[in-house]
Every structure is written in structure tokens, then in C-alpha cells.
Length: 140
Image (cartoon, rainbow, N blue to C red; front, side, top):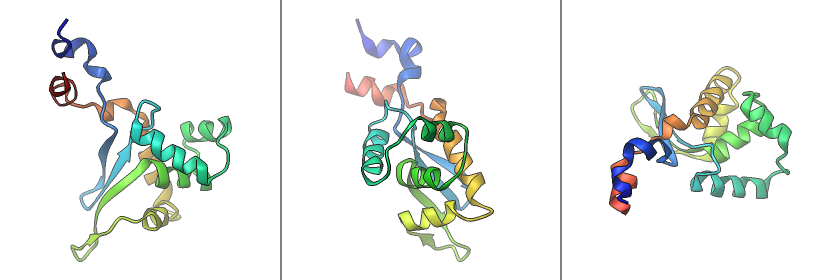
């Protein structure tokens, strides 16, 4: 059997671990796929759990219900947001820092809509579809 010729049957299973989410023309976030199938997610989640409280079912219920609180902001900033492409009003690139993303996500008027968009994006597997040729054919 030639796996490389099964793109129509199996292509939907081929995913990237990260993709860029456009917030505006001058603000894009590199977001990790919220899935245990993602090595990036598993690694970052493991690191986050080791530094934080025990994660229980209520925590995940809040994530999937888009409840934005201190725990979900921490999860989004430390686990899901990998990097950013951010340009200030003077046209200068702003360096990504965990403190910087938390500051934006905790902002009273900006935080909730951005957090919600990141969660929606990270949960939708279709956002992370990869090219069959890049993931399967080259590795066959």
C-alpha cells in the first residue's frame, strides 16, 4: 500500500502544531493547537501544570465554555500563545515576552475578546490543517 496516495482518505488527520491567528494588520499570534495529539501542546501543558495548581475537570469546562479568568489567561498566555508578530504605532516590532502577552490578555477591554478568539482558534482542528505533501509524502 502506498500511504502517499491516500490524501483524500486521510488528509484531514494531518495537522500542524501551530498556526498564525490574525488579530489585526499589525498583530498576529502564533497559537498552538489545543489537542493531546500535538507535541507542542503536550510539552507546554506539562510545563504549565508543573508550575501551577492541579488541573481538574472544572478547569477544562471553563476553557471550553470560554470562561475568561486568571487561570484561563495564564493557560492561554503560557500554553497556547507561542509567539507574536506585533508592530507598534511607530512601525517598530515589539519583542514577544510572556509578561507582554499577559498584559494584553489581562487588559480590561482587550483581554476577553482576544482570549476568546485564541481559544476558538486553538480548539478548531481545521485551523491547523497541514499540507499532505509536506507531512506525509516527504516522510514516506
